[in-house]
Picture 1 (cartoon, rainbow, N blue to C red):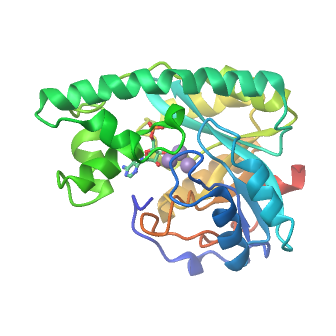
Picture 2: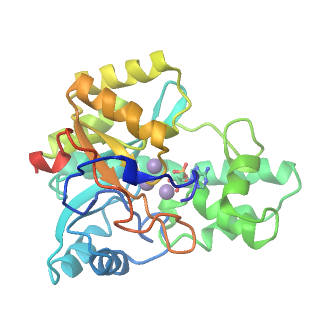
Picture 3: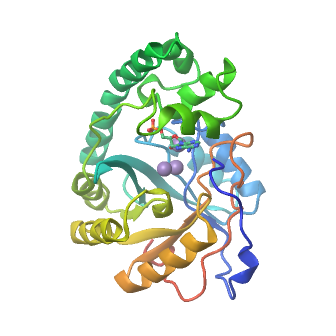
Length: 292
Ligand code: AMP
Ligand code: MN
Ligand code: MN
Ligand code: MN
């Protein structure tokens, strides 16, 4: 989704040549296209290495892989796990794991089991400010009810004319301190990394530039993530500014993290950056695919 203005990637010299997109969403979570359509679009856009990383769910992987295998694009199993750290919602991407792993599947099922209750609480809070029918309205946008997310609420609030676009809905209603935001118990950092690593995968901190942490908190997050077995960080993300790219390139080097790259594409109407549309990784960083 389009949270930041695009920036001039051409200032980054000697990028790696591989066109990789290791962060994307389908209707299996809060994206707008089916898993097969996302994979088809990635291949059509010239992506060579692609991961579908739906929120807290592996249900789209088989269909996306089937499409990818009919093209020359290499497919990597992915997921984006919702956790709570430092009082905020943080996302940990898992890549290249065994999607049949029992502990991973059980952990994701547990996270999904909390989403409907949270959605009811969000709806009750929005009712207090006079916006009715949000639970049912948001549910109409969710293909999988147990994956009901703030994105589905945002689409409904735009539909009924409360805000003009997704960005405004989030800023006015769906972030901490706003009427539709409720706290929720997500997984822990250690649990999420443990599930991914236990399934043979690589844990990646998603879009670190989006978290409103102090420098010290960010370092604490990176330390704890590394101690848990985390190995990679998204340096390039569809939601990163140029400053974010510089900052997280430095931190990736300092911590010895592999660097990942993904658009965080949710749909053609909502995402500013298309599949494969980000800049390649800056030169001098170790790409996460070296470990696949
Ligand atoms: P949830 O997992 O239900 O908390 O929903 C989080 C999702 O909301 C993210 O994965 C994004 O797709 C979307 N999102 C979060 N913040 C924003 C924002 N500021 N503007 C648009 N979409 C957002
Ligand atoms: Mn999302
Ligand atoms: Mn995310
Ligand atoms: Mn995402």
